Amino acid sequence: MKKIYIVLILVGIMTSSCEDFLNTEPTDKIALEQYYTNEEGLTQALAGVYDPLGSEKIYGNNLYTYLEVCTDEGYFARSAQTTGVQVYNFNPSSTEVTNLWTELYNGVNRANDLIAHINVPKMDEVKRQVILGEALFLRGYYYFMLVSRFGDVPLKLTPTTSPNSVQIPKTATAEVYAQIVKDMTDAEAKVAKSSSIGYPSRVSKTVVQGILARVCLQMAGYPLMDTAKYADALSWSKKVIDSGEHALNVSYNTDPAYNSFNQTIATVPVNSNNAYRQIFINHASDVYDIKESMWEIEFKGNRTDGYSDAGRLGSQNGITMAPSSATSVLLTNLGYCYGFVKGTGRLWSKYGTGDLRRDWVLTTYTFAVNNTTNVATKTAISKTQPYTRDCGKWRREYETLTPKNKNYTPINFPVLRYSDVLLMYAEAENQVNGATTNAYEAINQVRRRGYGLPINTPSVIADLNGLNTGTFQLAIEDERMRELCFEGLRKMDLIRWNKFVATMNSVGAEIGANTNATAQQYGGLGGKSVTARNLLFPIPSLEILSNKALTQSELWLQ
Image (cartoon, rainbow, N blue to C red; front, side, top):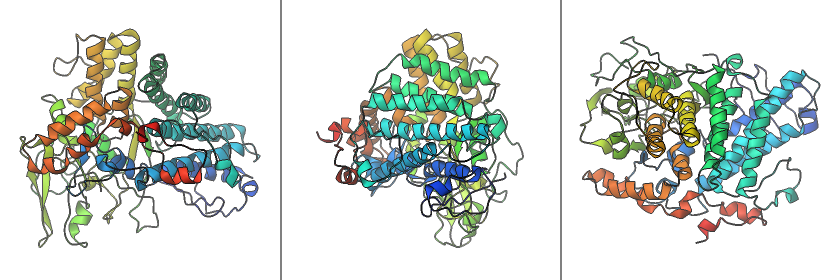
C-alpha cells in the first residue's frame, strides 16, 4: 500500500500525516496570509484539519482504550485500576477528558481557519470546493464528537484571533446539532466519490452520507428525542446503499501460511473461511478495502523509519503477548501487546451457534511465552471462561512492517464500515416503516456474512424473521454489538437508546457475581460505578478556569 504523508507547518510548527494528499517537501509558512497563497498550502492545511483525529487523545488510543472502553461489550482489564475514566471513577480534572476536549477543539479551530481562507489562493475551483467540503465535514464531525459526549458546548465558527475571542458560553445541544447537519449537508455536495479517491482515510461523499445517518440516529434518540430524524437517517443510509460504491467484504485469504502466524508454533484452529475477520487483518496488513471499510484513521510506521504517526490499536487492545525481554524475537514475529481490553460474558453469549465472528473478536487462545527460548505457543481457552478473553479484532501477528514497535502499530482504525450503514438503515427503516422486507434484508446480509454464508441467499440458520417493531429494534441493538464491538460505538448507542445507566449497572452486577475471581476484581467495577452523570463527560476544570463564560454540566453539579 502506497502511503504519502505531509509535514505541515502552520503558525508555528505542527506535524501532520493525512494519507495521499501531496508528495511534497516540508514548507515553512509563517503568517496565515502567506500560508494560504496556493493550492499546496491549502491542501497542507486540510491535512492539518484531519490530523487531530489520529492523536492518541482520540483515535490514536484514548477513545477506545480508556474513555469508552467500559460498556457491556468489554472492560479495562487491570485489577489496580480502581479510579479513572476506565472505571467511571473520575472528576472534571481528568487528564483524558481534558485532552479529548482540547484536541476536538483543536480540530474545530483548524477547520475554521481553513474555511475562512478558502478563497485566498488562485486555484482550480473544483479542487477548492472539494477541500472546502472536507473542512466543513470535519468541523461538523468534531462538533458531533463534542456535543454527543459533553452536551451543550461553545459553538465557534470563526478563527480565534485574540484571547478575548475564547470567552464563549455554551450553545444548546439542539443548535449545535443543527450546525453539524448544515456543515455535513453542505459538504456532501462538494466532496469526491470514494471510488475516485481510492483510499479510505480521506472523506468521500458516501462517508458524509453514512456519518449523517449516524448523526441523525443520535438526534432521534436520547437526549434530544427528535424522532423525525429517523426518516433523515433512513434517507442518508439509503443513499449510501443506492450509490453502489460499497459492499460487504465476502473474500478472505485461504493461504495456510497466511492464516497461521508461524507454522512452527502450535496453533489453535481459527475458521479460515471467515470474510469478517479479513476486514481486520486488512487493517493490520496495510491493505485497503474501500468497499467495506469506508473511513479509516490512517496510521503509519514503527517509529524507527522516520514516521511518528503510529497509533496503539492492537498494542493496547489485542491478544496479550508480553515477553520480558525488550529484544525478544517475539516482538518482531508477533508484536508486543498489553491486553488491556477484555470482552464481557454478555458479549460472548450474544453470538449464536455457528456465528464465526465470536471466535475472532473474543480470542480463543492465549500466548504462552517462554522468555528463555523466545518461543510462544497458543493455548486454547476453555469455553467455560468467557471473561478471560482478550479483544482479538486487531492482531499484531498480521502486521507486515518490521521490526514491530513495542507500543505503537500502523493499524488503521475504522470509523465507518458498510455493515454499520446496513444496520443503521435497518434500524431507521424499522422505526419509520416497521420491520419491512428491506429492513430484514439489510440486517440479514450482515448476519449471513457473520455465519460465513452467501450474503444474498436466504438462510434458515442466520436470518431473522417474524419480529414486530419492538423486537426488531432489540435485534438491531444486539446485532450492532456483535458486528461492531470494540469499534468505539457502543457507549453512544446505549446512550441514544436511553439504556446506558441501567445496562452498565446490570452488567457490573453480572460480572461481580461471576465465579471467575479475576473478573470480579475489575470487570464489574466500571458498571457498578455508573450513574446518570456518566451520560456526559464533565466540562474540563481547566477549560472552565480559562473560559469564564463557561459553566459545568448540571449532571456533574449534582
